[in-house]
Amino acid sequence: MNKKMYFLLFSFLLMLPFVFPVINVNAEAIEGVTLEEASKVLTAEDEKLYKSMTDEEKNEREISIAENYDEGSILSEEDTIFLLNQAKNLKNNSGIELRAGSSSKAVSKTLSKFGTKVTLKGTMYQNIAYVAGTSTFRGNLTLTRNSGSLKKVSLATHHSAYGIIGWSGKYPTVGRVYKGSVSMSKTSNLNSTKMDKTKKYSSVLPSYTTMYSQATVTTSKGDQYTVTSPSWSRAQ
Image (cartoon, rainbow, N blue to C red):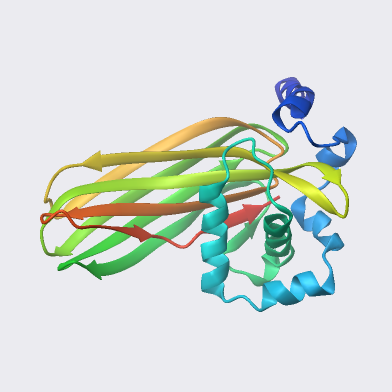
């Protein structure tokens, strides 16, 4: 780890009592423990409840966590248990990838509603720093109008990062260490609307990241709906 990364990590650890004031921070444990390793504390009942969920329910839960926590928030015990289960099942889930570094995931979803039909396609990218450094994410999307008339199209790719920021009681304390997105809107009835945007951020302790893309469509009659891709996750 170079001097810049050490500085970022040291600065973050100094700030933890202010950003997450209720946590007992163990700096040594934080730096060395991933969500996958911390999942060893899961009980048989925790795993049984997780395995009873469908893939669709798991996807909806992961997006719900991404939408409902602000940067700097601490996850509830219930949501912590869910992410620990996700991390533990990395090797058995083709939608989740291991380790830091660069990777990509294709997006493709078609939806018909209010007399229109649209297809959202593209690729999501992320390049995650190990422990600390500069991470990036990118959304390259195209929304195609297959039928009907549109008035406005909004495209967005959302990125979340979570990390173990301490240990309090039975389970580790997981915090939302980053929340960001790239987006655009266009008022038109074009056959296709495109976005290709990248965002960088300084990341510290990103044990688990998730991404998903959305297209919000407004029809010529003023009706509105959203096309949401499956969540894509990776851990280190």
